Amino acid sequence: MSSFDPTRRKLLQAGAAAGGAAVAPAMLIDAEAAAAAPAARPPAALGTANVTLRVNGTDHQVMLDPRTTLLDAVRERLHLTGAKKGCDQGQCGACTMIVDGRRIASCLTLAVMQEGHDITTIEGLGTPKNLHPMQAAFVKHDGFQCGFCTPGQIMSAVGLITEGHAGDDPERVREQMSGNICRCGAYQGITEAVLEAQKIM
Ligand code: FES
Ligand code: FES
Image 1 (tube, rainbow, N blue to C red):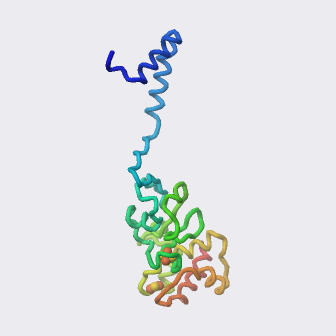
Image 2: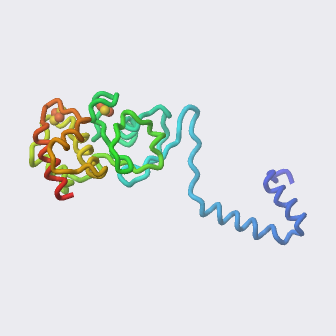
Image 3: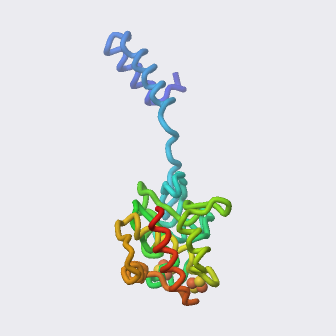
């Protein structure tokens, strides 16, 4: 019959070779497995990568240029714009995210390299009505002025705790936060906020 495809032809040939009886159950098993399998990823277009990013506990599947930084992917593809692009070269800390419990400059890593990792952005910490303790401490201690650096500062402050660097020495806090630049000079309030929040986290 002309409508037979090669796969079906092979199955019938195998069935004939096996006496016919074993093929039907095998076909049923294959059909059930196919139905239960998760949907396959669509093929990536030429020059793009098909990446699943786990951000704030949710998986996001995106097609992107493999050269896209994590910062650009999160801001421009996932529309989570809390992390800021300050220098775009790893010097200001405005783009700080937490990946698997450690701080990273998201402008310095490619999104494709972070597949399979747990990425947390400022949007994953708290909400306006239910602030994370670190966010509440920044508000209480005036740890910001213009606010541009603040998401990165807060992510770095949370990260220093998850990395095990918490302590009650202000100098240690300043050293741990030294990768985050504040052009408004809100450092005094930032240090006070970190010292207070880490007591209750
Ligand atoms: Fe990434 Fe400045 S934008 S460190
Ligand atoms: Fe303005 Fe830090 S609050 S740069």
